[in-house]
Amino acid sequence: MRKLLFSVVILSMILSACNSSGVEVMSRYGNEINDFEVTDENGETFTREDMEGKVWILDFIFTNCATVCPPMTSNMTQVVNELESKGIEDYGILSFTVDPETDTPEVMTDYLSQYNVPEGTEWKLLNGYDYDFIRQFAEKNFKTIVAPPPEGSNQVTHGISFYLIDQNGKILKDYSGVDTGDTSFQLDEIVSDVETLVEEGPQ
Image 1 (cartoon, rainbow, N blue to C red):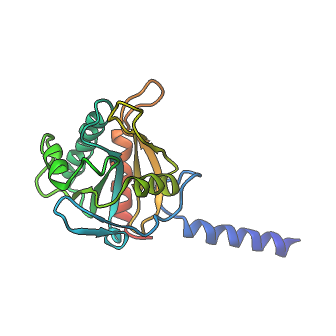
Image 2 (cartoon, rainbow, N blue to C red):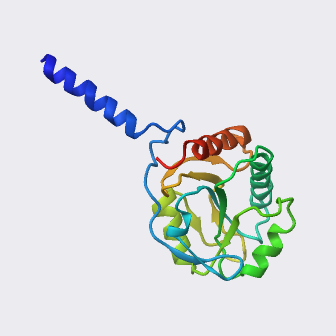
């Protein structure tokens, strides 16, 4: 019995060492993002492999959004400004459009230019796919919905979360990207988590 208990303790220590990150992983995540190949705001290919070695914050938006996307993008800009003020490097932002027919690279670049994003920030505005891709990509990787607009509307239904992804492409947790009746935008927590992951380096 003592040998069994000793083995359990040793195994627990090993598992703890393998999950030594200072950022707690939410139980519904811990999965790595599936392979993908899309296009960024410069018309250049961006793939899952291009994420390696950096911490990323990811969201789903579209430029014609009349409700949550403007405050989400404003809040993401706050995150970037805080990280830049702290001198944090080796991170980036990924914004996938949920309206790929409308949001060309030019349209998305013009949209982001309306916000106070520090020069040199790696903020990828991603397209180069169809609606079926983004619906499945969001659901399979992030457990979130992307649904077509109701008849007579151009407003796509999508989630409002920001997702934290580590240097190995693993999804760790989500945060509310905008204030709602039940949740609030968590600026300090997001910045702290990104800073922690960058300082720790790849696990």
